[in-house]
Length: 172
Image 1 (cartoon, helix red, strand yellow):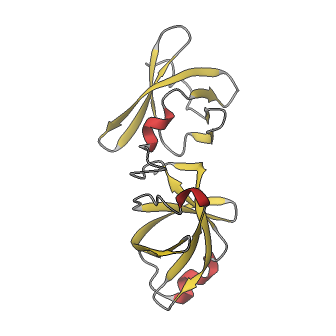
Image 2: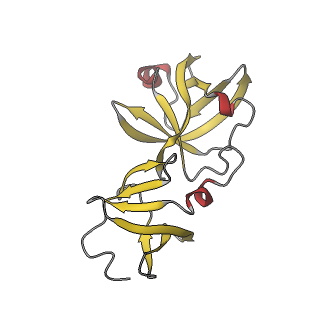
């Protein structure tokens, strides 16, 4: 899963019942077009924590009832009230678009602020996503698109800041 801070689904408003369900107050852009999701991230103490969804149901009024896998009791879930809920870029639909193709055209900057190039393609290999980057010198780089390598994604400026292992750009 890739954590994407630009896709805020909503906030956990309250717990619901004693089966570990929560009510997420959705952002306005999702009240009419709720994406099909299998997993998401909760922002806990400023850090993204992945959760898999056991079941979800739109209850109307901009609220989504969610029960997470492995969290089947009120005591386990009550501490998450107020947490921000983010979609991951692996979600099947985000605002009616396939989210991984939305990254085509993004500039990739390295942790030293140098420009690696522009994303021209997203490649889904078994077990690993790759981004194809076209450099200013006309070379193509294949870089693993993994959450551990991403520093931040700025969808407004269309920039992805990455921290790549030394020598990775030279082996392509």
